[in-house]
Image 1 (cartoon, helix red, strand yellow):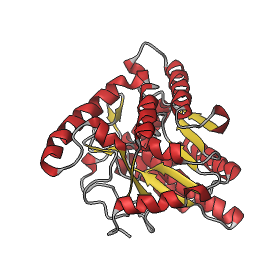
Image 2: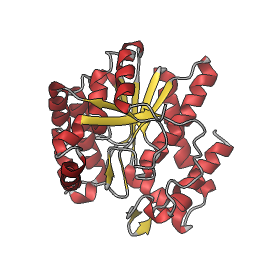
Image 3: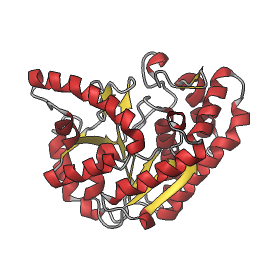
Image 4: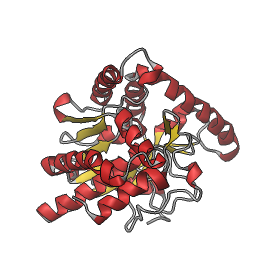
Length: 309
């Protein structure tokens, strides 16, 4: 399927979209729904959204405490998905602190903590993700791509994968499993799989109304203005390239197209996503201590693959 036109695959998916009775968007942060906000709009009335963290990670850019910032981001998330037709009754907030997740990841990197010591913390996240999936019993799950751009994105993907195995063991049915790219190499590859990605790409082209709703979803996050400003700089570069390649020429044209795909079979979660670990979670740190795949995330992956709990 990798050679099929991704827009044709998008049309094919839309033809059977009504067959998904209770699709689930299982995301790490409030605003992770935006790259595929049009897809979320197209889902039927049984759609659900679940966020793993309280999105308090950028509290230091405000005058708020982590807890206060998490409350703000949670409220912004509810306002965002309302524009996609998702009411508060269809939303689940697991509420894990980004600050604490990053603290744990940095301690694994530095050796201040062992995996045995960190296991209970990550076991709680694994258990809540599993319990959410078992309770909602989705028939299609959309989560963040395993791509080495952001550690909580990757961990959410990994724990979702484990939860789907639990659901299949409990019900005999395995939902369709899709992943959605956010960014990698900081934000130089934004909302698309990287050029060397070998998996199947599905693309949608949004209508004018869907794009307007998606822009409203973005505007529901005033706390994220700086992040979206950074993305707009990338779109400026993309626009210049677009005039040469025939691609999108501005940010609006870029977000009109959404890309995602089925999670590839046999994905090796212990293999580092990039050739050089430096390019994985570039510049991510907690209070000056780096967060890396090989030293921060792979120990978690290896531990839970060996003993899912």
